[in-house]
Image 1 (cartoon, protein in one colour):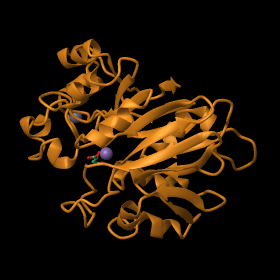
Image 2 (cartoon, helix red, strand yellow; image 1 turned 135 degrees about the vertical axis):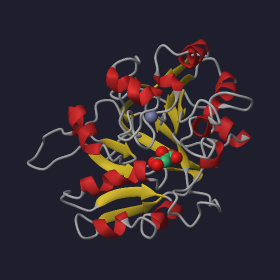
Image 3 (tube, protein in one colour; image 1 turned 45 degrees about the vertical axis):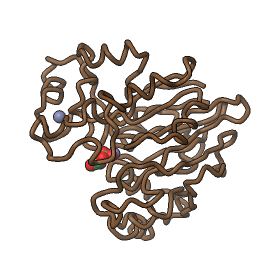
Length: 306
Ligand code: MLT
Ligand code: MN
Ligand code: ZN
């Protein structure tokens, strides 16, 4: 199967429109060696298939489709390679692009948990608004590891797992987490017997979750922040990484320590990188630290073949 990284940045993208942190100012002026990135989304298809599944609909989706011409196979006057959309959570950076898909000729097949469907019907009523356009054919994801497939996406099987992370600020569960506010998905290519675990928002590792990650050929996980106090230290927020549901890379119990314990053959990639994260600077000490641990940082347009 082929996993295309449509967008590798967290909410806000990189550079963020109003941000002049070292990274954002540096990538604009060219003084920091870093690549701009759009917001969090991937596209997955089996080998030889035109159609696939979109994970998350980023605010940057139109730019992402233009940058990846295979998402527009051009088989008819109106066409798309997006056979269905899976949402990992109901946050702005993962759901806003749904508005941009409103010109579809038929209802949009949308897979999400009950918790996310509720947030996108009430707190941020995207699904209600879309009923005035193409409509939504909503399918329930049970975040309990039950295998499911997306009609029209041949050869790919999914299993979703509830994660400890955070629902969006407009969610009634923001401070009372519900299983399904955020999920990780094990994406398997049945014919090849290969799989990747995708979790752009992962606040806490558990033994069961780590077991699932150990069984995958690759992990594509939360790369939001390098340190827990990254935002407070820059004076940009009072909240730590863990406060908003993201496990930082560094420190005791951080993502680097966990990834070190995976089987040696597992490919390790970070996605959903916040614009403040020093790993975006290709010359940074933090980026060199990741390289020493064989951890890759996703870039927009990159393809993972499994
Ligand atoms: C998050 O995952 O915490 C988000 O990127 C926040 C946002 O989209 O504003
Ligand atoms: Mn996000
Ligand atoms: Zn910034």
